[in-house]
Length: 105
Length: 172
Image (cartoon, rainbow over all chains, first blue to last red; front, side, top):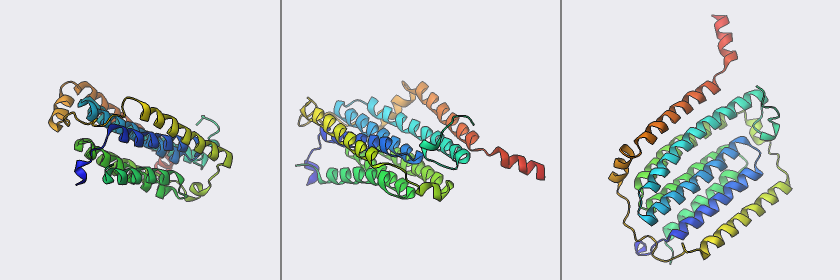
């Protein structure tokens, strides 16, 4: 019954916009490094949603291929980001970015 | 008029994204992020992209969320509970969020993308994705593999504890 009701492209884009706004709110407000990483992930997910939605809209394959690459790159980015957070925690005993005063190891 | 599955997924995704950012305990934040990514995978299924949805579940829910949970466990709990954020910054963040939502949302709604029957193109075939990945995008695939290998090696090198290893060598 609900399969008759078609979703439209703009619905997905609105969800993506809301996710980007929530992610930017997290990046602006939060000072916890892990939470900032989480907000970056939310923004990346919104971008992936856009890619796949436009891939469905145009019937092109490139959108899905780019989304796959983007997911893989985001995984690498999280690995590096968490490694940096662990090192920073070891140096400063703190994961608050306001406390990372010097870049010197 | 709107699909109830879509509305449910949207509420789940956005709600757990907000929970991921605003809970007091960071471990619940990581779990909220995982649920939000499951919601995104559901959107991919609605968009007739099952391969990307499975990839999303395997990589994000299976790897990234678990990685974040492990990092939260490695960090001492006392550092996680000291939340220092001033009210002014939070209010400014919320205003910025609403501004972005309103501005971009209104732009989308009045743009030419807001037309009914937008998904009339045939859905993409999974086999075509595989063929495209192994022919036209094969150099990109190789570079991506190298990037992932480099990221893993770099993360291992970063997380190495030199002081502990030196102590062990002296002891032995």
